[in-house]
Length: 111
Length: 113
Image 1 (cartoon, rainbow over the protein chains, first blue to last red):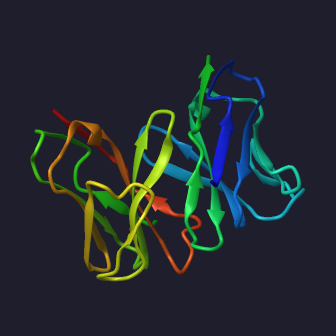
Image 2: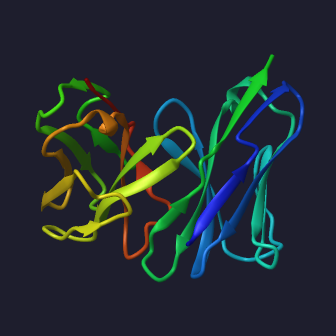
Protein backbone atom coordinates (compact mmCIF):
# COMPACT_ATOMS: atom_id res chain seq x y z
CA UNK A 1 0.00 0.00 0.00
CA UNK A 2 1.30 3.43 -0.92
CA UNK A 3 2.17 5.65 2.01
CA UNK A 4 3.80 8.93 2.94
CA UNK A 5 5.35 9.35 6.38
CA UNK A 6 6.41 12.65 7.87
CA UNK A 7 8.65 13.19 10.85
CA UNK A 8 8.70 14.54 13.39
CA UNK A 9 4.98 14.83 14.10
CA UNK A 10 5.63 18.00 16.04
CA UNK A 11 8.56 20.29 16.69
CA UNK A 12 9.10 23.26 18.98
CA UNK A 13 12.09 25.53 18.39
CA UNK A 14 13.14 29.08 19.18
CA UNK A 15 13.03 31.93 16.74
CA UNK A 16 16.22 32.04 14.69
CA UNK A 17 16.81 28.29 14.77
CA UNK A 18 17.08 26.20 11.63
CA UNK A 19 14.70 23.26 11.24
CA UNK A 20 14.60 20.25 8.96
CA UNK A 21 11.36 18.44 8.28
CA UNK A 22 11.36 14.97 6.78
CA UNK A 23 9.08 13.20 4.36
CA UNK A 24 9.62 9.60 3.29
CA UNK A 25 7.44 7.76 0.84
CA UNK A 26 6.60 4.41 -0.64
CA UNK A 27 4.59 5.11 -3.76
CA UNK A 28 4.69 2.70 -6.67
CA UNK A 29 3.92 5.23 -9.40
CA UNK A 30 5.75 8.33 -8.22
CA UNK A 31 5.31 11.48 -10.26
CA UNK A 32 6.12 14.36 -7.93
CA UNK A 33 6.40 15.34 -4.29
CA UNK A 34 4.77 18.46 -2.96
CA UNK A 35 5.13 20.49 0.20
CA UNK A 36 2.31 22.59 1.62
CA UNK A 37 2.09 24.94 4.57
CA UNK A 38 -1.15 24.96 6.51
CA UNK A 39 -1.94 27.85 8.79
CA UNK A 40 -5.33 27.80 10.46
CA UNK A 41 -7.35 26.18 7.71
CA UNK A 42 -6.28 25.96 4.06
CA UNK A 43 -2.95 24.49 2.88
CA UNK A 44 -0.92 26.73 0.61
CA UNK A 45 1.52 25.37 -1.93
CA UNK A 46 5.27 25.65 -1.24
CA UNK A 47 7.24 23.40 -3.58
CA UNK A 48 6.90 20.70 -6.18
CA UNK A 49 9.84 18.32 -6.63
CA UNK A 50 10.24 15.88 -9.47
CA UNK A 51 13.98 15.36 -9.88
CA UNK A 52 16.56 14.10 -7.41
CA UNK A 53 19.24 16.40 -6.08
CA UNK A 54 17.85 19.67 -7.39
CA UNK A 55 17.17 22.10 -4.58
CA UNK A 56 14.11 24.29 -4.73
CA UNK A 57 14.44 27.53 -2.80
CA UNK A 58 12.09 30.29 -1.77
CA UNK A 59 13.46 32.81 0.68
CA UNK A 60 14.38 31.01 3.89
CA UNK A 61 12.70 27.79 2.76
CA UNK A 62 14.36 25.13 0.66
CA UNK A 63 13.62 21.56 -0.26
CA UNK A 64 15.32 18.67 -1.96
CA UNK A 65 14.28 15.23 -3.15
CA UNK A 66 16.17 11.93 -3.06
CA UNK A 67 14.43 9.47 -5.36
CA UNK A 68 16.91 6.71 -4.60
CA UNK A 69 16.33 6.77 -0.85
CA UNK A 70 12.69 7.87 -1.29
CA UNK A 71 12.58 10.95 0.87
CA UNK A 72 12.50 14.70 0.83
CA UNK A 73 13.48 17.34 3.36
CA UNK A 74 12.15 20.82 3.91
CA UNK A 75 14.60 23.24 5.51
CA UNK A 76 13.67 26.51 7.14
CA UNK A 77 16.53 28.77 8.20
CA UNK A 78 16.37 31.71 10.62
CA UNK A 79 12.87 30.71 11.68
CA UNK A 80 10.28 33.33 12.57
CA UNK A 81 7.07 33.05 14.57
CA UNK A 82 5.18 33.34 11.30
CA UNK A 83 6.64 30.00 10.25
CA UNK A 84 4.52 28.28 12.88
CA UNK A 85 2.18 25.99 10.95
CA UNK A 86 1.53 22.42 9.96
CA UNK A 87 3.73 21.40 7.05
CA UNK A 88 2.21 18.78 4.78
CA UNK A 89 3.97 16.53 2.31
CA UNK A 90 2.14 14.79 -0.52
CA UNK A 91 3.20 12.49 -3.34
CA UNK A 92 1.41 12.49 -6.66
CA UNK A 93 0.58 9.10 -8.13
CA UNK A 94 1.14 9.28 -11.89
CA UNK A 95 -1.27 6.45 -12.60
CA UNK A 96 -4.34 8.35 -11.36
CA UNK A 97 -3.05 11.85 -10.58
CA UNK A 98 -4.13 11.58 -6.96
CA UNK A 99 -2.17 12.92 -4.02
CA UNK A 100 -1.15 10.68 -1.14
CA UNK A 101 -0.75 12.78 1.97
CA UNK A 102 1.44 12.53 5.02
CA UNK A 103 -0.01 13.34 8.44
CA UNK A 104 1.93 16.58 8.66
CA UNK A 105 4.54 18.09 10.98
CA UNK A 106 3.30 20.69 13.43
CA UNK A 107 6.00 23.33 13.80
CA UNK A 108 5.88 25.82 16.66
CA UNK A 109 8.33 28.71 16.74
CA UNK A 110 8.75 30.32 20.15
CA UNK A 111 9.78 33.98 20.29
CA UNK B 1 -5.71 34.94 -7.48
CA UNK B 2 -7.47 31.61 -7.57
CA UNK B 3 -10.27 31.52 -5.12
CA UNK B 4 -11.88 28.44 -3.69
CA UNK B 5 -14.77 29.26 -1.42
CA UNK B 6 -16.48 26.92 0.99
CA UNK B 7 -19.90 27.98 2.11
CA UNK B 8 -19.44 27.56 5.86
CA UNK B 9 -16.46 27.82 8.19
CA UNK B 10 -18.18 26.10 11.10
CA UNK B 11 -21.19 23.82 11.10
CA UNK B 12 -22.94 21.90 13.86
CA UNK B 13 -25.47 19.24 12.87
CA UNK B 14 -27.40 16.52 14.62
CA UNK B 15 -26.96 12.82 14.03
CA UNK B 16 -29.16 11.68 11.16
CA UNK B 17 -29.44 15.08 9.49
CA UNK B 18 -28.69 15.52 5.81
CA UNK B 19 -25.74 17.88 5.41
CA UNK B 20 -24.62 19.83 2.35
CA UNK B 21 -21.12 21.28 2.08
CA UNK B 22 -20.72 23.61 -0.87
CA UNK B 23 -17.55 24.56 -2.71
CA UNK B 24 -17.17 27.09 -5.51
CA UNK B 25 -14.03 27.95 -7.51
CA UNK B 26 -13.62 30.89 -9.84
CA UNK B 27 -10.74 29.80 -12.09
CA UNK B 28 -12.52 27.47 -14.50
CA UNK B 29 -10.63 24.46 -13.13
CA UNK B 30 -11.58 21.03 -14.41
CA UNK B 31 -10.68 19.12 -11.26
CA UNK B 32 -12.31 19.44 -7.88
CA UNK B 33 -11.75 17.42 -4.73
CA UNK B 34 -13.20 16.87 -1.29
CA UNK B 35 -10.89 15.85 1.56
CA UNK B 36 -11.34 15.36 5.24
CA UNK B 37 -8.55 16.07 7.65
CA UNK B 38 -8.23 14.39 11.03
CA UNK B 39 -5.38 14.69 13.52
CA UNK B 40 -2.61 12.19 12.84
CA UNK B 41 -4.23 10.96 9.64
CA UNK B 42 -3.46 13.78 7.27
CA UNK B 43 -5.72 14.58 4.37
CA UNK B 44 -7.87 11.76 3.03
CA UNK B 45 -9.65 11.97 -0.29
CA UNK B 46 -13.41 11.41 -0.18
CA UNK B 47 -14.48 12.09 -3.77
CA UNK B 48 -13.14 13.91 -6.77
CA UNK B 49 -14.44 15.10 -10.10
CA UNK B 50 -12.66 15.68 -13.39
CA UNK B 51 -15.61 17.14 -15.24
CA UNK B 52 -19.17 18.30 -14.87
CA UNK B 53 -21.52 15.51 -13.80
CA UNK B 54 -18.53 13.20 -13.39
CA UNK B 55 -17.46 11.83 -10.02
CA UNK B 56 -15.02 9.26 -8.77
CA UNK B 57 -14.68 7.69 -5.33
CA UNK B 58 -11.60 8.48 -3.35
CA UNK B 59 -10.19 6.57 -0.41
CA UNK B 60 -13.07 7.00 2.03
CA UNK B 61 -16.34 7.55 0.15
CA UNK B 62 -18.59 5.61 2.52
CA UNK B 63 -21.30 7.77 4.02
CA UNK B 64 -20.79 10.55 1.48
CA UNK B 65 -22.02 11.50 -1.96
CA UNK B 66 -21.20 14.40 -4.25
CA UNK B 67 -22.77 16.50 -6.94
CA UNK B 68 -21.20 18.51 -9.74
CA UNK B 69 -23.93 20.05 -11.86
CA UNK B 70 -21.82 23.05 -12.85
CA UNK B 71 -18.10 23.29 -13.48
CA UNK B 72 -17.48 25.80 -10.72
CA UNK B 73 -19.43 24.07 -7.99
CA UNK B 74 -18.76 20.78 -6.19
CA UNK B 75 -21.01 19.74 -3.34
CA UNK B 76 -20.36 17.14 -0.66
CA UNK B 77 -23.44 15.50 0.83
CA UNK B 78 -23.72 13.56 4.06
CA UNK B 79 -26.99 11.67 3.61
CA UNK B 80 -27.34 10.87 7.30
CA UNK B 81 -24.68 12.53 9.43
CA UNK B 82 -22.97 10.47 12.10
CA UNK B 83 -20.65 11.46 14.93
CA UNK B 84 -17.66 9.82 13.23
CA UNK B 85 -18.05 12.33 10.42
CA UNK B 86 -17.06 15.14 12.76
CA UNK B 87 -14.00 16.50 11.00
CA UNK B 88 -12.41 19.30 9.02
CA UNK B 89 -13.52 19.19 5.39
CA UNK B 90 -11.35 20.76 2.71
CA UNK B 91 -12.31 21.41 -0.89
CA UNK B 92 -9.67 21.85 -3.57
CA UNK B 93 -9.50 22.57 -7.27
CA UNK B 94 -6.82 22.29 -9.92
CA UNK B 95 -6.52 22.75 -13.69
CA UNK B 96 -5.91 20.08 -16.28
CA UNK B 97 -5.37 16.38 -15.88
CA UNK B 98 -3.26 16.49 -12.76
CA UNK B 99 -4.06 17.78 -9.31
CA UNK B 100 -0.59 19.14 -8.81
CA UNK B 101 -0.62 22.56 -7.23
CA UNK B 102 -4.17 22.26 -6.06
CA UNK B 103 -5.75 25.31 -4.49
CA UNK B 104 -7.66 24.79 -1.30
CA UNK B 105 -10.63 26.42 0.32
CA UNK B 106 -10.56 27.60 3.91
CA UNK B 107 -12.16 24.47 5.22
CA UNK B 108 -15.39 23.65 7.03
CA UNK B 109 -15.22 22.41 10.58
CA UNK B 110 -18.21 20.07 10.91
CA UNK B 111 -19.34 18.82 14.29
CA UNK B 112 -22.03 16.16 14.44
CA UNK B 113 -23.70 15.85 17.82
